[in-house]
Length: 257
Image (cartoon, rainbow, N blue to C red; front, top):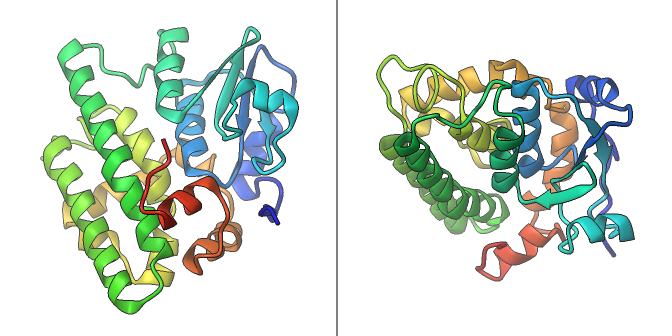
């Protein structure tokens, strides 16, 4: 049987944000409240202060209209002036292209923008798969391996792509794409702490301080549901019973493309 999302809608501060964006608009954000890939784009929308219409999608329902938008049937997706796009990193690019004057998250310097794209590739290709292998690991030895691999992946990203020093955010004093792209997984660190014993301090003190700032960022707070509701969804990942496309790919030793 397909997974059922319980609760079916956002809760807490995220529910308030959904309510503010419930009216029809030319920019439609097709989303799933529980999904970190969705939250990447949601954070960007809130950071940029863009008006949009939020539409909750059950990705297991495969409704015809949504499949016409994204044949994979996965959130997030955007419809803008009746034209559709999907994939979270593509949508980050699109929002800065379509709304260049609204608090851009992409650096204006071409070289810096290129470095940020490289950082996003590493987050998506290394950090995110390591997260799911970690949460789905069942045997103690596999969980230990998962912990070490996830910590190593975060350390590599922090060492290679964070500017460090007194900078507040990953690439300096402006909240940007790296923060938005990695922030949703930081918002789920509490689940890793409860079920796997992970702490941001395992990566390093500077990284942990950044992670704390992420959790305090208004755009992250306003797009986050209550911890107990994330718990209800992610319990199936920690028990390795989830039937999402990501979960199935992880079991095969693959990554969702």
